[in-house]
Length: 158
Image (tube, rainbow, N blue to C red; front, side):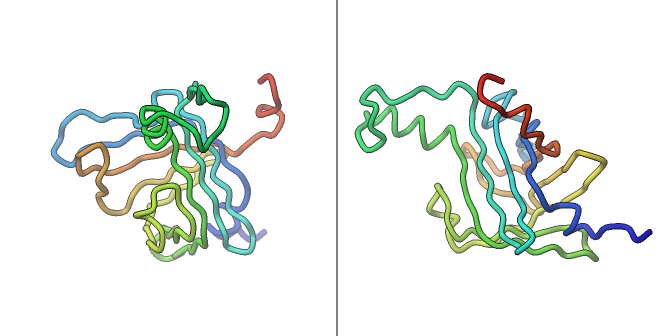
């Protein structure tokens, strides 16, 4: 039996378990989406991907209209959610992949291609930034753990 390629093993949906950022200056790690984040990352067979990460318990806008919010509501929205989508590419030799941001909630990422270190162990996917990024005013390395998504666990009311 032939072992599946890294690309083939990525295909599907993964649910976010943890998201940690470790400052390169050695200061304490922090969790930008809290210690119990929500998120889904999906890799499609046609080499497109989509990532959605969120703090739990986000507050609804008082107006009920996503185009009508206070400055504080907009700021909270911008810092409590990450979303981007675009093509991905796997480098089998280096065991890393790239995400190219075609669309992003953070406009600075649009048009960027970012490298990720990748490791899959059973039903767990480990992604990390391949080089430092800026986050919360610090230079950090990001570490995310995902579990193969189970649609029954995401049903309404779960």
